[in-house]
Structures are given as structure tokens and as C-alpha cells.
Amino acid sequence: MSRREPAWDELRTFLEVARDGSLSGAARRLGLTQPTVGRHIDALEDALGVTLFTRSPRGLNPTAAATALVPHAEAMGAAAAALARSGTSAAAIDRGVVRVTSSEIMGAEALPAIFAGFRARNPGIAIELAVTNRNQDLARGDADIAIRMIRPTQSGLVARRIGVTRIRLYAHRDYLARFGEPRSLADLANHCFIGFDRDNQTFRSAGALAKSLTREDFGFRCDSDLAQLAALRAGVGVGGCQDAIARRTPDLVPVLPNAFQMTLEVWLVMHRDLKAAPRVRLMFDWLAAGLTDYVRGRRPERGASLVIPGGPKV
Image (cartoon, rainbow, N blue to C red; front, side, top):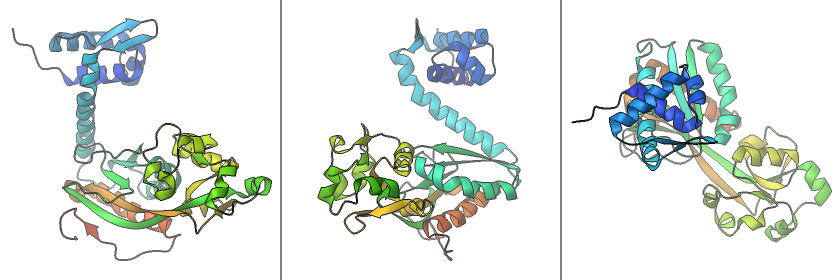
């Protein structure tokens, strides 16, 4: 006897149960009753012929089959969300949803003020912001627009280079008043250096100095960029910070400005197929202007061009 194809509502329920670890939590998130969620899981297990969860005192534990299914269900969820965004008032410039993705730092430090102006002008457009330091797949529909710190190479994308933001070492003036200012890179060994805990992927891209350091060199260790920035602002120690952010925090003082600095390109990216979507293009152009002000200290830049990776400027 052939098995039926799983229904989307069953897969959506499965994904929420996998994320929450309980039927009741998934029910609240989905606006369903707990028995309905349980029936969806039972029906999906029947359709697939596998057990997806085992019960424990702490809740539901996903089986190996469930773990393997999660990324496929997430891809379907992203596609369904993209379809819903595309189908919502598709012909209207000032209605619908635009989903933007960015790094933690850009999402918390650069984008809120830009979004405030956009919403004031376009109250009918809802904004969804996904903050992650891993690139979202625009081709798969994970987001409509992405802010990236590296030039995109994936085909089918339209990209605009916004500019360059520089990262240098900073410390709060209160910290320097207590512990003195380091005079050389070697002096940093006598200071509380802010850096990574277990995830060094982002840090390793920060040049020769970063490659020479281990987690034991840091007096404050955390894998959250936002927590590192908060620690820097609180005077915990010395750490890296974008000049564009430090300019807004007068108490942050550059440390060893000639000994260490790195630059990151800022790119604004969307899928080529969305150029014809009025509200997405409206957001794209608004972000381009706002991010240009951000990286250049509010000095406007004119004539930025669109680039299709692997293709001509448009």
C-alpha cells in the first residue's frame, strides 16, 4: 500500500513541535488546540512511516528521522512565507510585507532608525527582520532583502555596494582611566580583551591579529556580537567596534588606531525576480540611502549602481 504525501499543515505543526519541544507550546504558537497538534503529528508519522518524537520528563525529543526532516520542513516554511509575502497586495506599492535579513550588529545598531523613517512614510508595509550572522538564502525565499558584509556571488541576485565600514579597537574612557591605555599590541596582554567564547568563525575573518589569538587571550568571552558591544560600552575592556557605531558613543575611545584595523564592505542584496515588486524595491532604495548615511557618517553618496553577480551593472 502506497503512502500519501504529507500535508503542509502537518509539516508546519511538526516544525513548531520540533522547535518548542512540546505539543502545548506548539499549539499556542500556531493558534491550535493541543489535541489538534497531536493529531497532526500522528498523521505525519503515519504518512512517513516513522516515529518522529519520543516522550521524556522534559518534553518531546526528536528522533533521528525528525532531525533529518527539520531542514526540509524549514525550506518549505520559508517558501510558503515567501509565497504569502508575494501574494499579499502584490500590485500595491504601499501594502504588504517585506522581509529583511542582516547580521546581529547591523540589525540592532544600523537598521532600527532606518526602519523608523520607512514606517513613518509607509505605514501599510509590515517589516520582518531576521537577524543572523549566517547568510540567508534569498533564492530559496528566506528573505526578500539582505544586508551582507561580503560581496554576494550567488547567481540570480541584484546587489548594490553601499560602501565600507571600518572596525578598530576601542575602550570606554572610564576603563582607560582605571587601567591606562595600551601602547602596543603586546600591552593588550595586560588588559581585559573582549572576544569569542566557542564560536570563532566571525573573529577569524578579522585579519592577522585575530588569527594569532585564542579564547584564553580574552578576559571577557561571549559569542554574541551584541553582548560584546554591550560589554565594550559598559567599560568591561578593550574590543573591536565599527567606527560608524563608535561615532554614536562619545565615551568610546580608539585604542592603538594604527596597529589594528579592518574593513568590511556593506552590500544590499535582493533576488533579481523581486525588482518588479514595488514595495520590495521601495524598501531596497530606502535601505540603500539609509545605509549609505550610516557607513559615511551621514554624508550622502550619489550614483550608486546595481550589480548582478557575474553580470553587468544595471
